[in-house]
Image 1: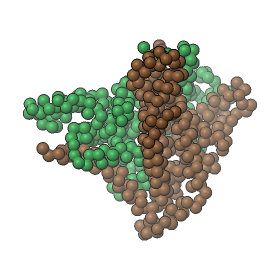
Image 2 (image 1 turned 45 degrees about the vertical axis):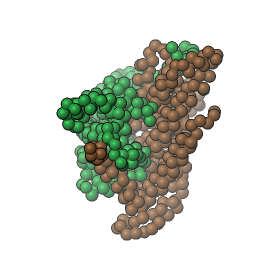
Image 3 (image 1 turned 30 degrees about the vertical axis):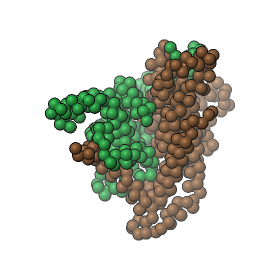
Image 4 (image 1 turned 135 degrees about the vertical axis):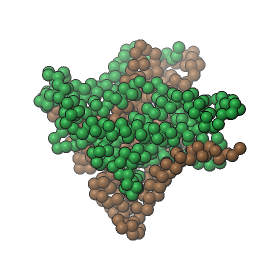
Length: 276
Length: 285
């Protein structure tokens, strides 16, 4: 038992307030996405749609670029998550299990990467990508997303690997296993929650990322969902029904992914933070 | 045994990060003192960026944006964490729901809120006029003095859940004996909040605040998607100014000069913050 606790009316009011504030925009998004155009532009607005329709979804799925952008987003987020995971596994293992002279410097370097103001390096990144011929390619965005995903992934995995007893690995090495064998057969299976935390983190952040995609993917063959959504809403006359339907298409997969793996993800994130 | 093995493991990641961070940073410096043809122009790009009033205005807006966002994110996030640290039925579900604003894409949050704040058809104006809180619809996203506070509110909504989960993790690591000792001394709930919980989560709050500062300084999505810096540059913050200078005016060199100045200010802020926050661990409240 803990604390003296809040009284139940306060808990009740606080909880209701919290739930309403956090959920209402999604409820409104969902309701708006199944309203007809006339109904969206009615004063006063109807809380509940009089004639629910799937027209907006049909428009988004069959008469817009959104499906293509969805595919682009899956490829780019999947690719950068995979790449970040592979790089982070090796780097974290090196940081967690070995001592070398320049280690503090490189660990600080990785952390600084997380603190960098991204707006300040957009210009040179763009020029670099242009020179390499990577503007408007999947690889361009996948690489650039390493800036966002890699530092925190290395940070989270390093603390996970450190928590696994070294004795397990030493025993395997005595039995004749190689370093890499140890990493793949002992350390990785034991750090599954940490790996999942990194995967969810990397996938969600790259899926949601807006500004790099806006700068480095200007062609509809590589544009991602966030850019597609902003295209809907920046036109002179915003089609709010379609915007809300597209928002649903974009949010539902990520919300599901997150809710399924929530526990591991939050655990991985807060473990890294509270241990400092 | 060769003690370089660890470095070899880390090398691929370090090379990628070096390419993507150190090289562009150095390149920004080079761009800022040259012109389009690559010829040396000294400080003229800096002068060209410092002269117009809009740069100062963007900088002031940035300070308001960062300060306003962080104060409310920390207060609301901590309050939510204290609430979710209580034992009550349905707590797990409410914890999950609280995280949702943080997980949804920023662009989705921006467009949904823009629709809710819509002057004519928005649900917020409807709720406020029908309950007679305001006499006639408010132009939330067009009234020059209202836009920035509205955008800050959206940003607070987006990120207070992050503060809440981190602080909640901190609260749960506070040993129970502290509460028991306090109760023996006759402390009530608010005493516990003030004397046990807040001091207990201080290190977490310090780390989280630094992240929030960085994120606020980096955040372009919400403002860009809703107002693009308007009306009349009232919501223009420096990152957006850099972006527009580079990709709308296509003057990369001046954008680079602005980036260098922005970068310098960010580093100074982060440095001061780290010094101040690590220098006062034992200060009495």
